[in-house]
Length: 75
Picture 1 (tube, rainbow, N blue to C red):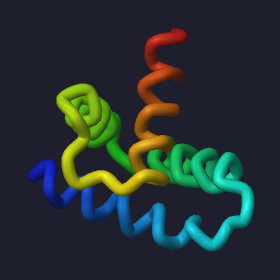
Picture 2: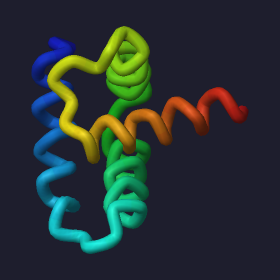
Picture 3: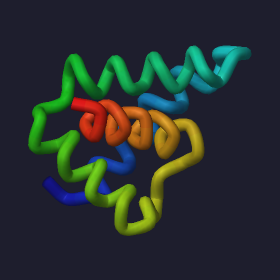
């Protein structure tokens, strides 16, 4: 999938969680959404994109993708 589209989708999810006063809860919610509803190939691609700098990812989305990357490294 086009990485710009994945970034837009991740950022849209982050916009939904941006109203959460505790950013930790917001990041966890975004990561959970990506785990539940994104195809593993999409998650792999966005994690790789973050590893290359993550251009286009907004801060909450970036933090959520970083959390997913950390989970994968922990396995």
